[in-house]
Image (cartoon, rainbow, N blue to C red; front, side):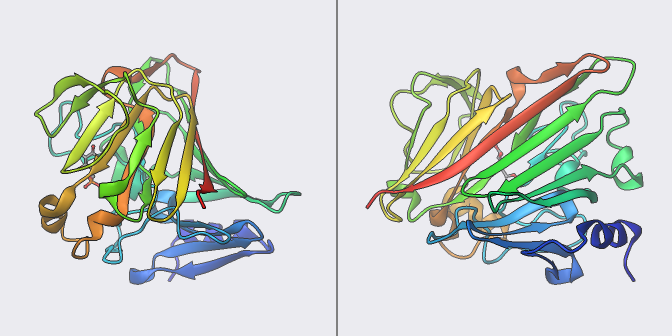
Length: 304
Ligand code: BG6
């Protein structure tokens, strides 16, 4: 039997060319999108974009071949939304890591096929017993995906409560790469970062980011666009962003990936997270009635 959220999801989709309802494992409903620019899939739980593949490209958004799908769990990969906190909760160690949004139920509130052949889908987070225990503020959250020649993601937080509310957040995007050991990330030269692998010490980036071991860094005070240069897949992925002062770069490397249990052997070689958000020092405080918009745009250029 379908839940109320699932029923309204089916109803709100209507009959839009290129959009189909499907099911992932554990019967979790998802939306498949196909248009002349490429294809994608969004899991309704978490409104989590699982796949995005522009035409004539390898998948840009990475999903672990061993991703686990279950109610209340975020699969490994895609674009989990970290909100209203990033990483562990500041004070409550038993609260879910990365907040409530990535495992919450969401409602599809609008779906459009635009004149330029793109699809634009808008979701609203549903407040219910499963997440209200962790977050009691009246802060409606809207998430909008536009799948066109580029992928655009917009996350809008509104503070409807009568007091200021502080959030941290990230678009925790897993990008597919040919071999992490050959990847370079441009755009962070000179930025200060907190290195979670080095117990939270602060460093300053010098040159491009390259990878030779576990990497878990929160770059602070940076509004720069980044480029993932991938000489194996012969492409670069451009990450533009607005409303974001933090960029998180993460790869668990072999040992940690094995412990996580949802990577295949050597699966960590084929992904990197470059997350646009506002974390730690860059947390955001919204005054009553204020709105904050976090936006990112991903586009791909072939290098051959
Ligand atoms: C990154 C964090 O954003 O997410 C890492 O910086 C964390 O510390 C990673 O390990 C994955 O988190 P999770 O909760 O999806 O395993």
